[in-house]
Image (tube, rainbow over all chains, first blue to last red; front, side, top):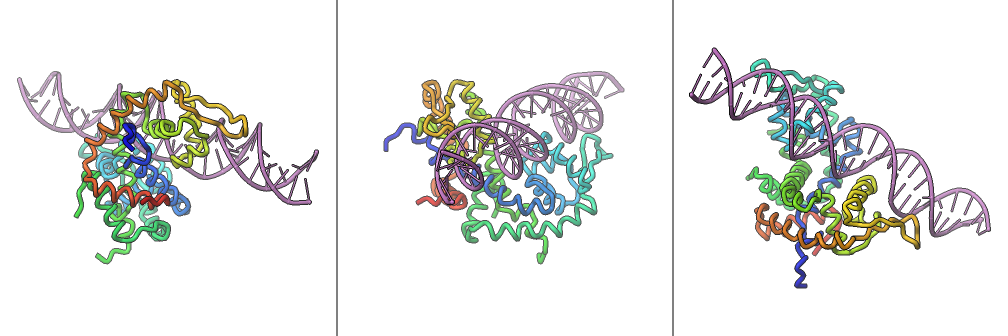
Length: 145
Length: 145
DNA sequence: TACAATTCGATTGTACTCAATTAAATTGAG
DNA sequence: CTCAATTTAATTGAGTACAATCGAATTGTA
């Protein structure tokens, strides 16, 4: 086409489908997450805690690529729901330690339905999913495999 | 591992790296978009208008996967900046027609630097980029190629 | 040991993002 | 024609995101 503006066409962006796709899939999570009263961001936060039981805000932020501006109010909400506790580290009071409660841990069993239900929504064959996964983690600078 | 909770591990999600990657790349756009005083969402909106000159909110929303709750305030901001006009369709007053202004069109030349600068940031070989693009559009339900 | 630099979380302000609701305009069945 | 159903934006409210700034705690160094 010899169009000097071709690079500015929405069709030629790689970030746009990434951005749109991310939001569309998160939207598909909503009905399932509603059942356990979690938002998507709260859900991935709980995922970290289901694995680790305890983590400070900084390390959690690094895992989720989120900063304290997002995490502080979110963690306060999880605390209100009784899913986590928040307390300063005795060794270094700058650190806030987030710990999962029994109630938070119990939610894990009910949450098992979520990835199960989502698997039926996202129609991507295993090879494509693996390829997508690999490329995304490379882009994130966390090479896998 | 035989872990019944494996599906709940952050590492095993496909949506999480999509979500994180999208935000990380948008963050990389910021310094370049700051130079032309646009946010990422405003930028992709302008992209549609650089191609089409004029579009109503509904069609714009379908292209960007955004609804009026996001677009209405965003378009008002673009109008304040003098980049677009907003007026009801005479044929059907329910439709709001967004039209690019001369000033908005002029921004296109300055915006050319953005994809150019970004290309140097995202290190993905052409084959991977093409594969990523294809998978994402399939997930979006807009098959290409 | 002072004390400047650094680290960490909280706060603030701007800008989305989206579900749900509303209101105006249009369309379509009777 | 008439009024119920539909379409379209706008509004509202809750929840992120993130840059910038702040203040308390800790660390490194003279």
